[in-house]
Length: 210
Image 1 (cartoon, helix red, strand yellow):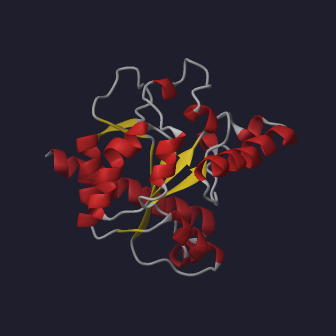
Image 2 (cartoon, helix red, strand yellow):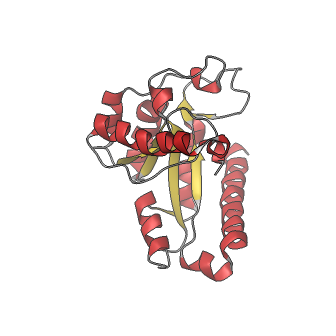
């Protein structure tokens, strides 16, 4: 019963993504370069009652998500591959899917990465600088789980995981002046590249606000 329920949820999420892309880009554009993304935050052994937003996924549930994705014939591709398809207006492979993780929690390296390796799935981790450096306000959900260190983030880049930027402060970009925006977008890229010695090509808007 539980597996059936999770299968239904995953299929529903993917269907919602297809519907959203068609509504935004038009049916033809969606067929040409459709973007279906499963976005996660933390993958943890033990959940906390303080996670009121439900941003942590149990390890066993995440494993079932991956099994469901493979079982239903979806092809997990890198974010770079999807972006390149969109840029070149090229049709993506049938049933393509991208997997991402926001903020930069240690559970990605400890729990998600071994499972991703088992399935051979690529993923992107969007790192928020203040989250990694533990300088965000104490009341946020980001203090519920340990975050990656810069050394761990460097190690991820050699494990089939690409690193993107999620800003400096995790504030909504729509509320910022131009100078603040430049810091969030440009400075975050520079900081992450300095620590990882790898180019950062992608940016994920905090809170989805743009």
